[in-house]
Every structure is written in C-alpha cells, then in structure tokens.
Amino acid sequence: MNVWSLIAAVSDDQVWMPKRASTVSAPVDNLFHFILWINIFFFLLIAVLMVIFVIKYRHRPGHSAEKTPAHSTALELSWTVIPTILVLMVFYFGFKGQMDMAVAPPNSYEIQATGQTWFWSFTYPNLSLIHI
Image (cartoon, rainbow, N blue to C red; front, side, top):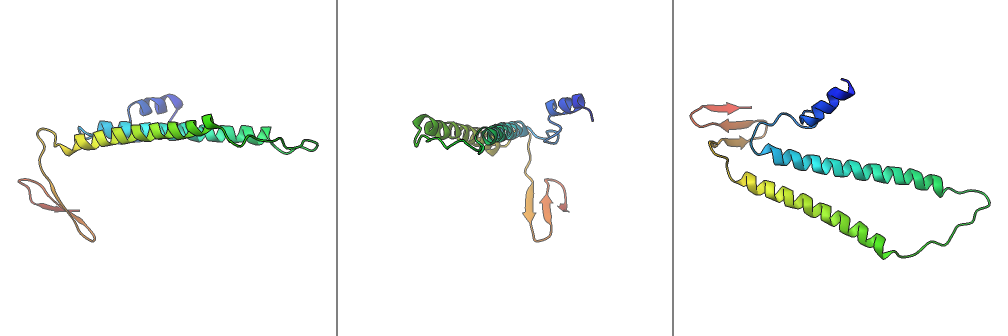
C-alpha cells in the first residue's frame, strides 16, 4: 500500500473504523477521531519538547545550574484550562451522541439479546432463536 492509497483510505474512514453500518455510527466515529488526534498532537508535542529540553539543558562541564523560577501563574492556568476545555468538549459530544442513540431510529426493530457464560442468544422479531 503506497502513501496515496493510505491517505485515500483514511479519508474514507477505512483504516481505523469499519464501514458504517448504522445511522448512529458517524458521531461515534467522529468523537473517536477527535480523541485520537488530540492524543497524537499531545504525544508529538511532549516528545519533541522532551528531546529539545534534553539537548538544551544537558549537563556540561564548566556550567553551573541557574536558579529556576518557583511559580508561573500563566503556565499553571494554561495546563489547567486547556485540558479542562478538551475534556468538556469530549464530554459534550459523547453525551450528545449518547442522547441521540437513546432514541431508536425510524424503521428499527427490537432484538432481544441474552448473554450467558459461553454464548449469546439473539431473538429477532418473526425469526427463531439464534445462538452465537
């Protein structure tokens, strides 16, 4: 698989998720991708900054340690406010998606599922019992 086919597959939601099979899968997939890209962004940010700081502040003979600031209100507010906003966004979209899924879509039918020790039993309307 070359790079262009991988990019095309990502744009069609084929790499991370299977094809959409229901009317409620789009918000769930979008929330998954949102969380995934937040994680990728912060992982890369932390990894790159860690490498930069390891190189910049390594121990060198003849250099003495400088006095560091003990408190930074701006830094503390930023690492509190930004994650709080991101968590509230994830909660909002997750809760909104849950409320949308709580209402059955039109033309849907009820399937009764029974979970037992080694199998599941599904009862479909107008069909016999199916064991999986």
